[in-house]
Image 1 (cartoon, rainbow over the protein chains, first blue to last red):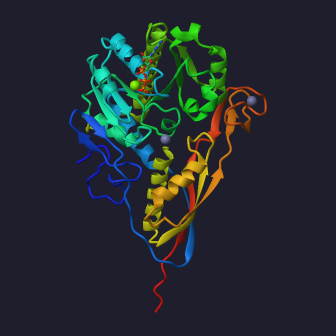
Image 2 (cartoon, each protein chain N blue to C red; image 1 turned 180 degrees about the vertical axis):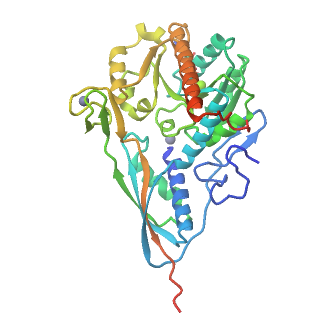
Length: 287
Length: 120
Ligand SMILES: Nc1nc2c(ncn2[C@@H]2O[C@H](COP(=O)(O)OP(=O)(O)OP(=O)(O)O)[C@@H](O)[C@H]2O)c(=O)[nH]1
Ligand SMILES: [Mg+2]
Ligand SMILES: [Zn+2]
Ligand SMILES: [Zn+2]
């Protein structure tokens, strides 16, 4: 039934859709996916002698498993996937629509939109002509790899393209969840204050790139750009930084060039990998 | 509040271990959390009681251990401890470092309650 996670195949004990880490999902008319439909219970035991077992398991191992699956599927189709994370209103959707407008003649682009409610953002993306899947997380404060896997099933083929995933506006929770992306991209707008990388270190640590957005507003707000970059490097020495305004277009070329560079770097890595493994696996057939 | 999802994943793993080992329940377990894991220990504790309600691990006590933040310096090669919002090399002060520990979220061990062995 479900090619991404094999749900509905009787391994209910291992992977139940009616609760736990991967909450129940139901596809809804209009192409939106709804998650977050309440937890489930299990069984209870008796009492007796005890035993200590060392397990050393990654608590988010299941999410990471789905993420690896997504990553393989995406790699098989040569898709660069970026996970855009930020606090609400920093300009993710605006950035996406302008990115699509500027790049759509260059390569196929699709978007996965994560919001707790509404499909406003997916509608804004579709208005550009690009395909978009809206995931509503309900009370959930982040996307997880399982949801993204299901969204991938609904997207048209995207070979040699770009998948942009707009996470739920939240600088905390999405940091812990790998979706199978190549990179997390953190967006910080200059109206939010330069101290955010230190206040939310997990997120800025997890991101490969920080986009400082709304620089058209710099003349009107107190925001120390150098200080902000220095703070970001404290929590992530390798982080790259691009200043831009999604609205005025200033700096947009640098961001597009970053995407182009990443695509090339991926292509080189993929070729090297294929060379090493002798023969290529063209990825999962289920798409 | 993603701690609830993390707690649900934790309950699911504990539950699976209880089943795999044919135990009756989990009595206690130990979790190792890095400061950069994106999870607040206090929130995880309260989320766990919600997530575990009605399960075989409902009564299990959670022991939390903080993993240290450690970095490897790409300049001098030293491995040192660092602060979560200042990932500098403790030996030479360089900031070209790589995180080697501090973002983990690991279920280390579980103490299981085994069924009475059917003697006689
Ligand atoms: N001045 C200025 N405003 C911007 C810029 N980018 C976005 N905005 C405005 O910021 C507001 C929020 O933009 P969105 O693109 O909806 O932000 P978002 O991050 O997608 O928001 P959520 O999805 O709700 O988290 C809108 O009013 C945008 O017009 C910019 O570069 N400069
Ligand atoms: Mg948006
Ligand atoms: Zn949360
Ligand atoms: Zn050093």
